[in-house]
Length: 445
Image (cartoon, rainbow, N blue to C red; front, side):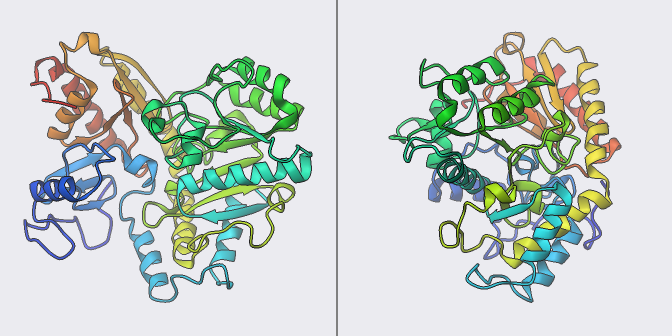
């Protein structure tokens, strides 16, 4: 994409330290390692400025961003229209809390209904909060509407899921990295069949059927990602979500689709669940719903389900704030105006075909939908080099991507990327695949 019309191409800070900006890549990494908790393992690159699909480090080196902040910047970094919406609203009103009404939240709720077609919305701030909220609503619905005995409601997830890092989210998970030493976990939720103790497998309808047959009476909901993002962009069978939806209807169980990473055009549909031709009972959204400028998340559902939440029983000081709502309205408009959803579908096909065409012995598999894609690296063919080594090599060549689950690399650029930029990225990846067996191995990862 050409540089956004916000004063031209961003330059580096020229190594000048300010009260806000570290003077160099080295200084930034050193301070963060000393002063901040080590709960991430970042690639050794520092973002200083960004525009569209490009980011620059403090020294002025330019990169193509192929992570998009885990699909939060689908509209491109620092989109000038989003910056304008943010600054204009910031100078007028930023926060009212929900103790009072504000004049932006209702306009946002109207926009949400127009775009997604759900009766009602409950606003939060982060993806994990949206998941927590959906679980709370589902449990309350189970007691008030379905008639489940108090304290008995079950909420199921599936194996290899990722729904966030809060206690409820990790209780849904079976991933040791997320769970170890954080117990005890929230009871009556998770990815295990209580009758067998075995995990409910993703893309396995029979496992869900078995759980519902045994426990459907007490089951409030099941939460599933339409494509599993953190697991390595795992795409289920075409009929999987439809069959799960049918089972949920049969057993009077709420189907929650976690669209926080897959939603907002990323997979070539506004919601990834639309590929399956279904309308789940509840949707969680976040990330790109506000284009990477301000944290906004929400739960969408019907009136029947949403109105089990009475005044005073759930909320968030910042949820529905006018600043986030203004940015989010504009973010959704940009998706429509720039036809980014259709673009994601078209360019995603080009990306997958381009990587497959290399016929690289290192590439075990290419999969994805739209511009949410993964390349599975066959580490037995890389002379001891890893997916992490490949990402370091890509970084040196000016492309940023990150491994997930060891040998899988996710490639998810902003949807504003041009075909020219995409083909440039494909060529960079092709070069790196050829060179990987000969590069120096990373000291540690």
